[in-house]
Image 1 (cartoon, rainbow, N blue to C red):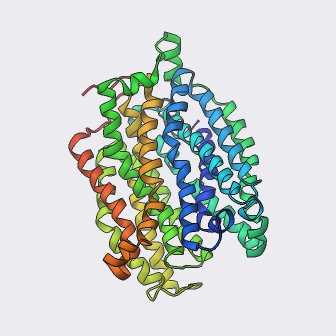
Image 2 (image 1 turned 90 degrees about the vertical axis):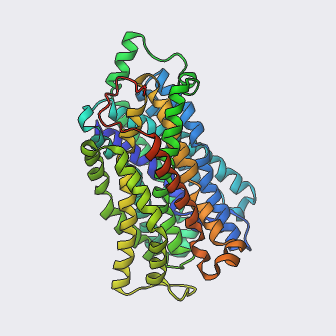
Image 3 (image 1 turned 180 degrees about the vertical axis):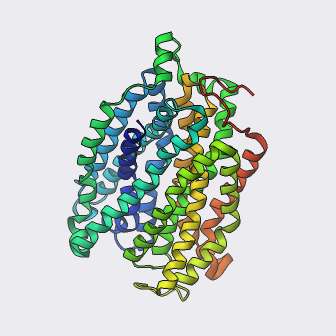
Length: 446
């Protein structure tokens, strides 16, 4: 059951993050030529568009999941995601159809975002409703590995295609291959999802006639439940979202622009850090079963806020201290140092993300769990986190940052994740209670 849920979710994250892994590359393919900075920002904005509609997907599919069932919703989200991803592989570029190219690209990113908005809450809910209360952090942490593994898989597939085909062929047609491969992954995922059984807790609700009649009203019209939704957002998922996207996507973007590291070297260094850090999702998930979810997640946010600036200053010192126009190789000691700094960020990522699924499912009752937990998760990750690469890159390239910080303007983008992390530490520390000992078949009412 854990493997089946995780594998399908991994493929869905792979589909979603393919574009993010190629965001720097896509600027010149799908947007007007002549301004490299504007094209990069437009490409990152398109990446963010998928995140913008994730909360809407959370409401649409969360409602379906609470009304009809977790399994059915699983099938719909995977088909929607797989089909929209594969269709990106057929899109003509700006050079062929002009402004219609970015319009079609953004449209498919929006469909991807809707699908992903329904995926995560369903996967976390489905697994949590199968496992013992005392090991919920451990079992749900397997779901938590899928986002990073999906990102890792997208880097691997793209990197292999770029090396195999060479730069000219990859730019001409090779970039389409990773997207078209989604047809294969869709077939595997659909086979897995159709063989899964309904969650036992939801099946019991259905048998007893206690399924929610209006999940949206009960989730957000009830003042008590709405309070938990808002606390989950501002005291947990907002900080978790910016830590996740800073430690993985923004780190990759920062190495390539503004540090001008060769894409192959950047991919390898980030991939090594991801591989080293991924097991820690399970470590912190299991640890949260012993000492609690709250303190691990908030310590991850606090450490990130305190150390991001020195980490990124050190990245520049190791990767490109003189800010050369291009860096294609580095001494082994420098590469090891960069991996260490990327791994440190992965430690923060796993601290905030490893326990978050268990925390969210424990916060809401079974009848409206899918809807209630999905919205704060996708607002935190889709809005606070998903727009981080765009916000941070826009800040580092802005006139005000150059005027205010001079050569230090490349670190201006860190102001945003640091501020969000500090907000989460304050709100979570003051207003959120520990949830690890809560039985999820009963609602929290204090």
